Image 1 (spheres, rainbow, N blue to C red):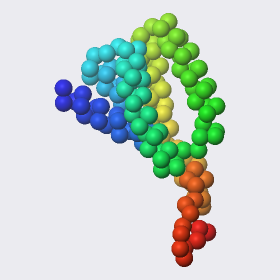
Image 2: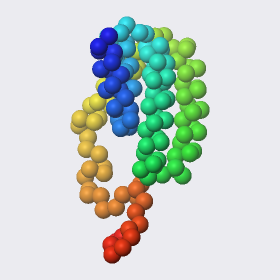
Image 3: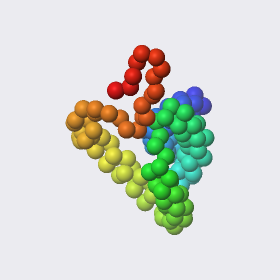
Image 4: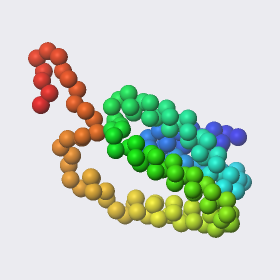
Length: 141
């Protein structure tokens, strides 16, 4: 029972940071808690929704989200999620588990071996965060 709380806590932190805590939760549920892949994915989606909502509220409050380009991506993502859940019902559970494991392995290797483009060059100005207006003698440059 303790490990369930630890996995839920770590998943919540990773999900709210946008790192993908769902992978950790799915691995925990399938490997340690004995759930099949499809059930683990469903639980992950239900778990993710309130955490994602809270993260979106906080990031929006801190002006870290530019909504204009996100709306089309969100709509297409919803359609993809519906289609993917329908397709998942027709795929054998072992194949689904293997595909997920290969996906996690590929992402892990990519993260270890490849440096991100934005880490290669220094960032001069972050366009995702709007500049603050200062009052008094300080001016925004």
